[in-house]
Each structure stands twice: as C-alpha cells, then as structure tokens.
Amino acid sequence: IDTTNVLFICGGAFVGLEDVVADRLNQKRMGFGVDLGQNEGRDAELLEKVHPEDLIHYGMIPEFVGRIPVVATLRELDHEALVRILTEPKNCLVRQYQTILSFEGVDLKFTRDALDAVAEEAVKRKVGARGLRIILEELMLDIMYQVPSVPDINELVISREVVERRVPPLTAFRKVG
Image (cartoon, rainbow, N blue to C red):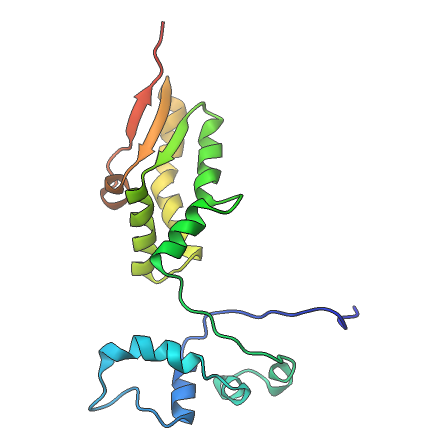
C-alpha cells in the first residue's frame, strides 16, 4: 500500500509519560516537599513539553517515533464537553437510545440534570468519552428490557435520581379507550 499522501494520527492515554518528561526537565514529582495536589495541573503542563526522545524513553521504538513529525497533546474532556458528546453529534448516544425505544412507541427524554449526572460519573471514573457508553448502558439495560413488557408506555423521563440512585424513570402512559 502506498502511504505517500496518507496522514497518520496516533492517539492514546500514555500513563506515565509525564514522569518521563519530568525526569528530562529535572522536576520532582514524588518524594518529600512535593505538593501532590498540584500534580494534576502539572501533568497537563508537562505533557505539553513532550519531545520525541521522551516517547523513545517511554518505550516506543525510534523508527516509529521518527515517522511522527508533530506531537500534540490534548486536554482532558471537561464536564460540558462530555454533555455535548452525549447530545450533539448526529448519532449521539442519547439519540441512539431514543431510537431504540421509539421502536416500542416510547418517547425517551433525559433531563439536563440527568445528562450532568452521567458526565459527572464519567469524570469521577476517569473514563472520558468512551465511558459514556458504558455508563448509559448500565443505566438503560434494564429499562430497555422492561419497556416491551409494560403495555401503553408513552414516555420515559430519565432524571438525575435515575442516574445516581437507579430509581425507576418517570413514566407516562397512553390513554386507552
């Protein structure tokens, strides 16, 4: 395969890379006199100073590192970015679950507080955007299996309490007759 005009983008969570950079810069990250509360903010600053030789010391082979012309760091997704990922893309997770339940004639709604709670859980677990699917799947699995067995459900509303305490969602029923 000719890769002459192909742009390769590599990404990942490189746990411990900040330690390699700190060693190169002779900055203490452990030991007496280090404020551990500052490490989190410092980690982002250190990662912005990554050089190719840091990647090699981290364990990547020099031939691979030599083919990466630009090294850029990305910041951790914040709460608001996670909520936007849940709701804004064309095929976002919220719409996926709404579509699944629409096949049963059910209108699924999430309150803003519920979306905030999902994002907060992702931040707490340190799982980022990938973790949003896991959290929603844990939340929605039983609900999706129970809905077909309950006649005349018209609407389900997922609130913060549903996310945090796993209480049943608010349910509206169709009028029969």
